[in-house]
Image (cartoon, rainbow, N blue to C red; front, side):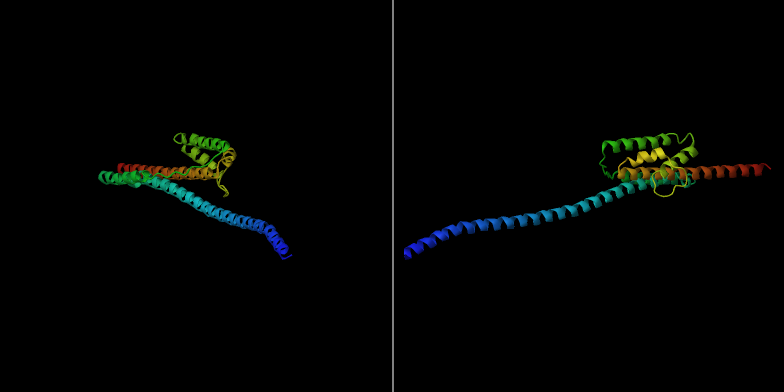
Length: 222
């Protein structure tokens, strides 16, 4: 009887052992699943943080692009300013050498932020660029008309209440562009309008000087 009970216990223990092992495997699988979920969550959190850094990096590069454009524009404006025309030849030559050196150093900095576009956005960008170029190419023919047309294009790019009419066709084209391209188009128009304003001031000043010279000559003749 004792031997029978021992055999029964051994048999029962042998049956329980696979169940325990099986239970251990189930618990092991459960623990591994939890660990995988935690790992996946950490990886996703890291990617979210990297995405913020990538966008900040692109914004910083875009800011550098704009700074380069501004620097080049400022150097160009100094070289073509009225003040440069009213100094001695030697001083003007020395200042132009300095301006050319600064422009050359600025141009050595290459910053490029590529914009991801679909086919429709690419086509819209080309169309908008063509519309601006057509006006720029006719600047010398009629400065005042070109300025008014550029202002109507600029009004189509800003959320502020425009001072004049808006080019509705240009607005529909710009809306089809990528967001980054819309910002670049607006910046280009701002630069063109600033340059036109500076040109008008130079022309006005020059005309005033000519008028003063004529008046002076007439006074001497009298």
